[in-house]
Length: 344
Image: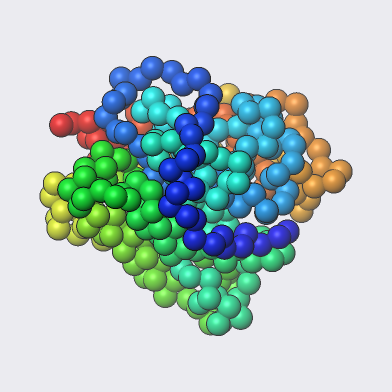
């Protein structure tokens, strides 16, 4: 697998000449008009094309259900982020580094598959390697944060006064997808870095991003807790710390609405109720196997991904993502409830 390499600074004029990109038809929604755009961060559960060099998701059958071709998503179709855009009647959020993407005024996705909450240099200095990539993905949450700052300075706020830029931030919804799962995978079995140390560092970095977004004028932020690639105890304590610190941020920013998504609880509830939700193969992988990746030469794919929870070894089918989205937006797995975004 090739590593996602950093891109040079984009020229401001390049963005201004990018035109509105066509998107799939989106349904009308009661939430239409509340937000003008979505800015998103995260790992492979949110990435829509920021790591296009990273094989094998460049190849079929990725994207087979909705897009008919690989779409930069680690799934057969849509991600939770895509369902969020549909809820808001906005186009799907284009990936910042997708060479084929064009940007409209409806937001940007900075999430990167394989990304860590802690700068990857920390792991290199401790001789730790990512277990799921042949060549490590070195783009971290800090990288995504820098890309966001670059984009805001060169595009969305370019030539605007501070008040105008603040208004743009106030009108946007910020999605901070799962961060930390890859970090826990990297330190698994390590005697050098403990889960406690990692938890404190990873949560601090997520909180730093949220605080900076709020300082720039953001008023609406959704933070998704991790739920994978670590044992349940570590994820539980991670999410407890994250929620405690988000509570502090709320107290410091009473005019902002900050939501936490309990992804771990949603995942366990879905595994428990898989057959009830129509999944005939709750534990099997639709594409590839645990040891043979989806999209690799010779890998096989199931005939009906909608019967599976798991798309490949680490990611979910569109059918599962649709249920996650419904749980997050309508069934109480978000604290405070998703509808609190629309209370005013």
